Length: 391
Image 1 (cartoon, one colour):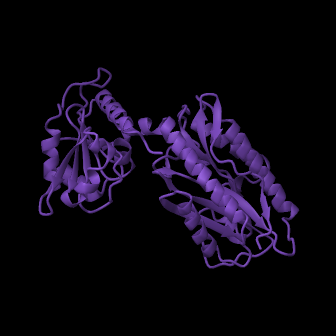
Image 2 (cartoon, one colour):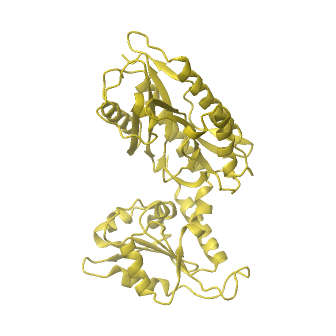
Image 3 (tube, one colour):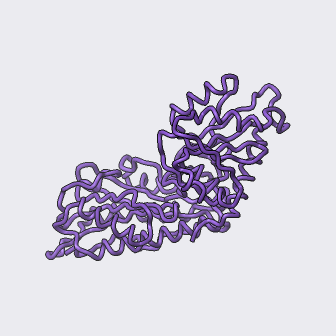
């Protein structure tokens, strides 16, 4: 499944409407998720400039180095004639072409809600290379700059039905990988070896990239972003398995906590079982709180209150969730201070964790979509502690 070409026309029009409402001049979109969302072009991140110039009126133009033109011409929005391809030669200055493309766009007038003294701006991608930004500023010496996210973040945060279907397929594929790892040999293997298997299985399940495979065993399970090491997994200890990648561009991200008993059946001790039950209750409560209109920070507060009440508050050291889509981490972020209300179509992780440094930790993570009537949980693997033989 892919995004239908007509969706890119809808997105371009929505971006233009937001640009007009903000009374800004144009979007200058470099390589990254914004470009892919608007055009379908997954461009290479090079020192050579690739840039979509999208004004309030006129034909959008995609500036690309000539050697990238064959790939860029296949992008859905380009192939369908929605975006004009502009190429530059190896000895050209591509930044010099941008003012000519922007010049076709009016730079005054706009929404009544914008104060008259406000000067229209050029909005550039949030992660555009500094070298490009500085050269663009020199090319537009009297024009203020702003961030493209000011008009694009609200659009990208609300996933349409096709995007949700891709996120669901990504989640289902990652679920199968978790179950395969849990059902295989773990004891005696290095974390790095298990991580390699995770990546191979994600690719075999249809992911084009396997972005991360956190395998934290024993005391390493208390490190939320642990990098899989040469440490060998022993019986009678937990394993935090946090995996994900991109499936048709859209992210998967799931965490489950395993316990490998080994041949001696070394089962989890009561202390760890109690910690895990608190965690499971917190994750369930936070997920159940998802519905339209609820402030994003309330999801964090709901899960955190359960962990605080059990005395593990200092051991929950990160936000409870992040948005997901074409990027693994994007808006909305479920964190204290974010009072933005959830909307139908918002997609994000719900992932509380408890970490006892030097001893062990645990985390449970699902991808959840805010539906019209409540949470739509995309991951289906049990949230119980996965007690496995691992031999």
